[in-house]
Amino acid sequence: MWSTLLPILGQATLETLYMVFASLAIGALVGLPLGVLLATSGRGELFEAPVFQKTIGPIVNATRSVPFIILAVAIIPFTRFVVGTSIGTSAAIVPLTVAAIPFIARIIEGAVREVDGGLIEAAHAMGARPMQVVTKVLLPEALPAIIHGLTLTAVTLVGYSAMVGAVGAGGLGDLGIRYGYQRFRPDVMAAVVVTLIVVVQAVQMLGDHLARKADKRNI
Amino acid sequence: MIRLTDLHKTYPARRGSPEHVALRGIDLDIAAGEIVGVIGRSGAGKSTLIRCINLLEMPTSGRVIVDGTDVTTLAKRDLPLFRRQLGMVFQHFNLLSSRTVYDNIALPLELAGASKAEIAAAIDPLLPLVGLEDKRDRYPAELSGGQKQRVGIARALSSNPKVVLCDEVTSALDPETTRQILALLRDINKRLGLTMVVITHEMAVVKQLCDRVAVMDGGVIVEQGAVDGIFANPQHPTTQSLLADEFLDFKPGVPSRAASPASTSIGQEG
Ligand SMILES: Nc1ncnc2c1ncn2[C@@H]1O[C@H](COP(=O)(O)OP(=O)(O)O)[C@@H](O)[C@H]1O
Ligand SMILES: [Mg+2]
Image (cartoon, rainbow over all chains, first blue to last red; front, side, top):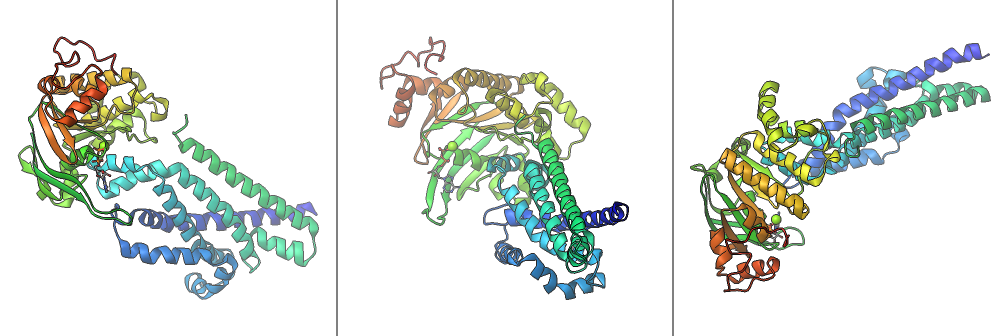
């Protein structure tokens, strides 16, 4: 029995990791600049843009307040437009990414806001241009907090990816629903649950390790 | 080197706080190579004044002439280039926790687009100058307050500025470390012929470091002159009370022990 279950479990785990890290990567690509802008577009700040802050802020909040499973279903037309289908692992990356972007943006915003204002002032005094303040000061100094935040995002995405499994996206969630629940295989369900716990633990440990390495404040 | 004429600064009203006039007509001349102290109590406008010199704060009116140029007329995109000619040292050091001593000192040069070789050539002689040869690859979290301020000073010097601005640079340090940092600044001024503007609320700092001093109160300079003269014969009540705070035997009008040229050390008062 395990000889047939193991390959299926391995395949599902890979699908889950693929969905999580693809949406994390694309989400960070968009969420990072968005978060930096949210943190620096206030009055008197680096990239002063009150209109941006007053419009994007609420949109980010609105996206974050929609429960993920509702969001995934609501944007099915958009998913179909982007991927050509709304079913399968690659299609699942669309709603996962859409959920990840505002999540990551708020995390980056918080991390950047935590950076001591004295450092920004020192950078200006040294003749830093606005983009240099971001790349040379804000992002390096916020890096430990950013890594912690991306770890939290990854863990959340593991959970979300299991939910999209319920609507046919593959991965561990899909395996749990189809075998564990519909075919009543408690052994499969148990294996899925254990694997999810192991994946989350591994992601958390990796993130903690990287954040500790990046943090030079307590040596 | 630096000339401030009729400088005014008003901070506009913000939610909850009314508009605030921080500078009301500052006139100050600073010659090349001299160390000028600006002393006053908290809120007098000292930091605003020094931040107007490198335009971290834009004056509401008046002129800031640095090395012959009225810098208040510079376009915003030219400010970074202008600021690279001035070094600044801060009370709370403002070092990047993510960078080593060496990389902190290198930052102004990196911002200016210097090559690795140029950066090394500039920093190698600076490390012994500030006494940090053996801390080169340490992070700020591994340093004492005095060592952090040495990094701050080296960083201010690395882009080879003509002027160094110091805002309360010893206020977070103990008396012994304060003496060492002030001696270092004096030494650097002599060796490199730098112009320095030193903000402080302590007369002892003025006495150990400065050639001339301007006393501020309520956004105006109430008295200025050579340090010896001001200590021997302070005219304004603000100056007198600042002296009386620190030098216990000071009495207005009577030349004090601390103010006499024969006085050797300020160590006991620190
Ligand atoms: N950014 C600011 N906005 C509004 N008021 C300010 C600001 N910076 C300083 N002030 C006010 O201006 C006055 C002078 O401040 P500052 O120049 O920092 O004084 P000092 O350095 O002598 O203590 C203070 O009353 C302070 O509250
Ligand atoms: Mg101040």
